[in-house]
Structure formats: structure tokens, C-alpha cells
View 1 (cartoon, each protein chain N blue to C red):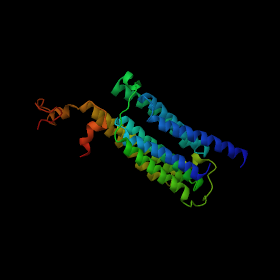
View 2: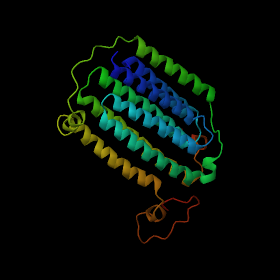
View 3: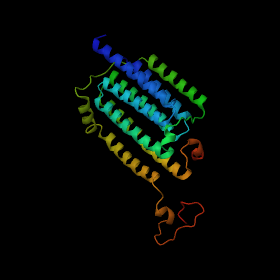
View 4: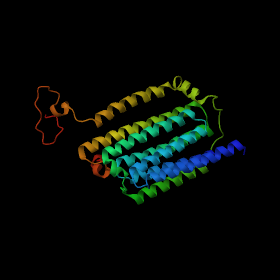
Length: 100
Length: 192
């Protein structure tokens, strides 16, 4: 277990999440992809903390990442509900006009 | 390699395999319910891996938060799709080739960086009690972080409720309390 090996595992998690975020059509599945990407970020952050600088500041940074994940999930669910309420769908393709 | 570090390495690799395999399974399994379980498994594996590097608090928070989050996600699936569709086979993807290419390129880039970058030596020694050190940092030198995260969380709660709730009388009638319901061709207007 070295910094490099943990970072490679984190990169794998991040990449799998990126695939999901780009390829999925259902909003909830897109959010799962984003969660998986942040999962990799948390693992990489923990590796940097442990192998390079085990100071409390690193743990604070990880808490901020977890907080960002919480905000992402809460707002994602809220947007999904608003979308479902107004358009009766939970697919990103049906809301493509929102990006304009 | 000492016996302890060998056991740690073996446990880490087992958790790493579970985390990545469960992550892949999220987008390979037949139903969204199974995808939710797979994502929860991936997060639990990463949370346990954090425990290996003595991040007790962060690891437990990750496990507990993600298990609860996946439970909420299951409720959403039932809400949007009904119980049966959430358990039925599905494949709703677009731009799959582009996504695979982007994900592969990202992995190659990140993995190459992880291997090729000359990482510096470890600086400093871990505190005797990591959780206590984190608490002291949050209540001391890093309090600004908590003071920033707190209003962001509050704003998230307010914005989430506003987005998710039904339109209220103010959307239908405007801010004039004596005004009659608007005859809008598009429901939801304020009638002005």
C-alpha cells in the first residue's frame, strides 16, 4: 500500500464515475456518477494526507469534500423533483433546453 | 515488509477491488435498485479503506452518510419510477462511446500522473488522536471553513425546499392578497 497504488485506485473510481456522469440519461444515475467521482477524490485526499502531510488541515479538506457531496446530492434531488413535477420526466435528454 | 503492513496491504487491495468493481457494477447492473446497492458497497469499501490510514472519523462519516444517502435514493427511485420499474432491467444511456473514451483517457492521465510524479517525502508526524486534532482545528485555526460550510448548508436546505415544493399561493396570485386567481394560459404565472 503506497501513495501511487492508492492514487491509481482513486483514479479508477473517478474515471468510472466520469463514464456514468457522461453516459447516463436518468438524473439519479448521473448523480450516482458524480458521487463515484467524489468517492475517488475522497480516497485520493486521504492518501495525500496520510503519505505526504498528516496534518489536521488535510482532514478539514476532506470534510469540505464530503460537504460538497452532500450539497450536490440535495440540490440534485431537488432539481430532479422540480423537473419531474413540471415535465413528468427524470431524463436529462428531456431537459436539454435548460442548458441553453 | 512487517506482518502488520502486509495484512494492511492485503486488506487495502481487497477493499480497492470491491470499491472499483462495485463502482463499475453501478452502471452495469440491470436495475436502479441494484445500482444503488452497488454504489453503497463502493462507498463502504472506500470508508473502510480510510480506516486503514487512521482516518477514523472521516471513514465512519463516509460510511454512515452514504448508507443513509443510498436509502434516500431508493425512496426517490420508488417515487419517480414506482417499485417495479426500479427493479426491472433498464439501459438508458447516450453518447456511450464518447463517455468510454473520456473515462479511459482520464484514467490513463491520472494514473500516469500518480506513477510519474516524484512525490515528496512525508512531512510531519500524525497527531496521537486524529479526531481530536480535527476537532481542535475546526474549532480553532480552521473555524472559517466551518463558518463558510454552515451557511452553504443552510442555503442548500432553503433552495432544496423551494425547488422541490409545490407552487404556493404567491405563485398563483402574486403578492396582492385580494387578487383573484390568474387566468394564465401557462399554470404557475403570477397573473401580472
